[in-house]
Each structure stands twice: as C-alpha cells, then as structure tokens.
Length: 213
Image (tube, rainbow, N blue to C red; front, side, top):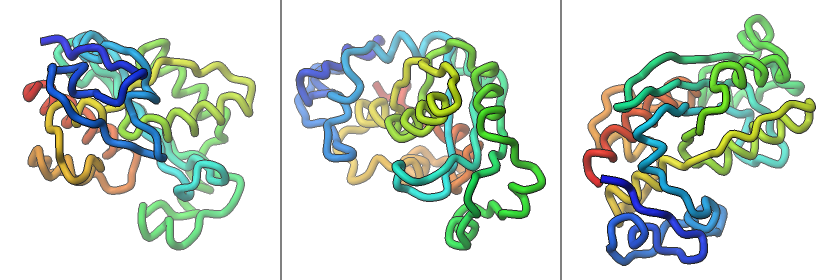
C-alpha cells in the first residue's frame, strides 16, 4: 500500500497517508509535514535509499560539530545492503558530558578521526544520489548541509524523516523519539547515542512501520 502524499500546506499527515484525521507532531515548533513538503514516502521506501545518522558534540545545531557519521544503503524490500561509519575529528575538544553520553573519547577521535571534509566526501561517495532517511531529519540535514557548504561540497540529496513514517503507523504515541520507538517494536539493540546504532535502529523502525500502514 502506497503511503499517501504528505501535504506541507496542511498539518494533517495522517489524513494524507491513510485518510484519518489527526494533527501531526511538531519539532522545533513547526509541523513536520510543513517542513517536509509534498512527498510520496511509500515510493521511496519500495526502492533503493540510504539511512544517515550523525553524532555531534552537543544538541544546539548552531554551535556544535559532527564527530561521527554513519549510513546504511538499503535495497528494495528494505534489505540491508552495505554500511558506512567514520569518526570525525572536531575542531574543539569533546566535553566530558558528551563522552559519558556517547562513549566517544577525545583520544579516540584524535587517533581515528578524519577531517570533516574527508568524511563528507566519503559519505557522498557511499550514498551517491540516493534519497536519504534520517530520524529527526531536519537536524541531520542541517548538520550535513552546513558541513558541505562550509567546505565547498555538494550534498543535496532529498531527505525524508522516519519520524513521519512512525507517526503514520502508530498515531497518538506520547513520544516519537527513536529510543521509545525501538522499545515499541521490541528492538533488542537499543540506539545508544552512536551513529551506527541509530541508523540500524532506524532501518528496523522503517521495516516495522511499513507493516503497520
């Protein structure tokens, strides 16, 4: 069944997908459907796409840096095709609080991290021109887009939000955070503030949601 069109002109995602009325959830104070515009996500899910995730040195997109990028290539039938994961050396030191949250140490980034332009080139080569899914897509899109612009790189793949798919499958949940959705679908490996576990959890979420729509 094709997920219906999501119209940016109205905050009624569920009406656009299944004909049921309902108000779509917000993030950053704006309706997600309005942020996304008019798309047919079902067509994207049936084809080839990639899932991307970033881990950052904080939560405020205005003054934080990317310190890890991960991606999965997904084939028709939501089949895991290949994965990509790279640590990125930020310009500023990682705080102890972020290390406690993610387990990523400054010494690890110093040894294994690559420069952000190199990481972005590797990511672009991995995902090519495929459409991209991310959970809370505006954040990831903003971080990756800002990094690409800063270093004179092109990264303008279309982004789609797995949170929208989850909302269509299970409207009315108290939270659409990835950790809560992972519990809902019984995912054993919980996302743990690491980019690779995030993208794998997002793929599991898309698989489960696609069966409920």
